Amino acid sequence: MRYYLIAGEASGDLHGSNLMKGLYAGDPEADMRFWGGPLMNEVYRAAQNGTNGLARDYKDGAVMGFSQVVLHAGEFLSRLRQCEADILSFGPDVVILIDYPGFNFRIAEFAHKQGLKVFYYIAPKVWASREGRIKKLKAYVDRLFIVFPFEKPYFDSKGISYIYKGNPLVDAVDQAVIPAREDFLASCGLPSDAKYIALLAGSRKGEVSSMMDTLSVFSDRMRALPEYSSFHFIIAGAPSRSPSDYAPYLEGRQEWLHLVFGQTQAIVKHAEAAVVNSGTASLETCLLGTPQVVGYCQSPINFNLARLLIKVPYISLGNLILGKMAFKELMQYYFTPDNLLTEVRRLLEDVEYREEMLADYASIREALGGGGASLAVARAMLEELRRD
Image: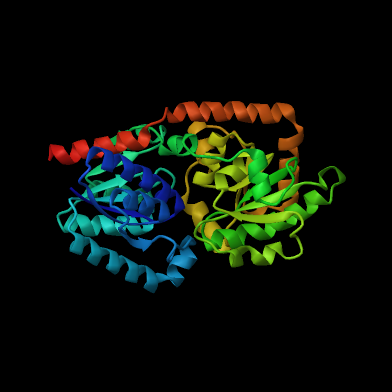
């Protein structure tokens, strides 16, 4: 069969690559084309003897927030038309959309009107905002595949059938090859006994620019304390960003503030604590077992729009899964260097607080189910296609 997959950011590339492995396992003759990233392309090249199935890299043009979408409207429409033409040229049996709702809902409508079967993997977060999109899910998506247990009663209440096979991030974390702490620190040019805080500022340019001002000043203030004067801070460089995006914040801080690309899981795993932009990275930090505080900072217009749209009590997936504040969320005006310093010190110094958080992490992992989600979803997709 012929599969056309669309992932618009780093997390989608990760989950798309694992889904492709499962599809190839169940359909060795599968013919795939996709918008995604290097992980998806690596799977494709391994299956197709080195050829390239990547129609467009997600790094080309990812935007964030209402204001940036407006500013990049022409580029967005151009990419949309390019994708539509490529789908028609390829002629797939199914279009598989992976998260990325702003773009993928448009493609869902287009593909449906062309008579193509549409699967949506990793449901758009309509339970958090923009519930009006439920009508589009019902109208344009043939089968929805969800990844969070709290989504089941929500979609049941909306009369939308779904398939739930667990969360693919469990596999992504458990199967990751993470270097030993000493080896990782050596690769960063740090001594084997170095202690550091992980800094994850997000994957989009707007997130980085919104977060790094605060994160860099936080590193200054923590290093200024005698008991933390030897600490380091490692920024996990996002795959879609370049060193130039972080360069202004490193200037004058190279002694303690370091930028590392391609080792996000190692950065988080071996850190004493982490400051994480809300999103998939926060849930990944739970699964890796590193105490964290979540930060969220946007332009005032985007933040105020988000407050009007978002209707869930927490912005972090781990807290939503658990139904309580397992770790603190510092949003917008509360995301300050001083508040970060207070919370990170508590993560390091309050043993009871730290252990309670790690116990909550165990409950979050249990709620997500065991491994094998990606393969199980791929099998379910194949069953749906063969049934027809």
